[in-house]
Image 1: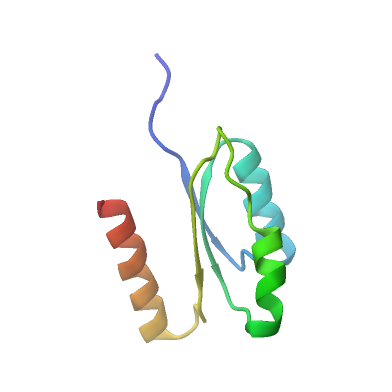
Image 2 (image 1 turned 135 degrees about the vertical axis):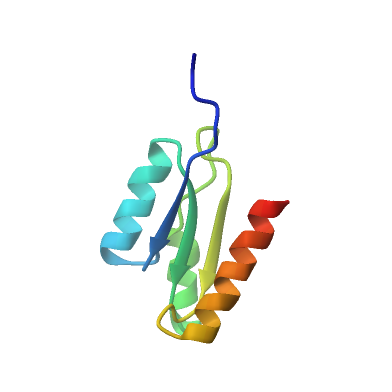
Amino acid sequence: MADERERWALILGASSGMGQATGLALARTGYRIAGVHLDFRAGLAHVEESRPRSSPRAPRRCFINMNAADDEKRADALDQLRARFDR
């Protein structure tokens, strides 16, 4: 019997370097990506280009632009993710 559960990966630093490479690799294998990244206005165009694209294998993704080292912002991001997954 096949496992029909959705597979999600939470990726910190999802817009560049190892975080970006990991997110893209996991998306290609069917994972949905929840990515956290810190980019300023000038870098946001690159973020849009580098996000894993939706595909039949991984049709959904969620990205949050914030500083994961900030306790309040991290709590807000977790609330956003929780709300998304509660739907």
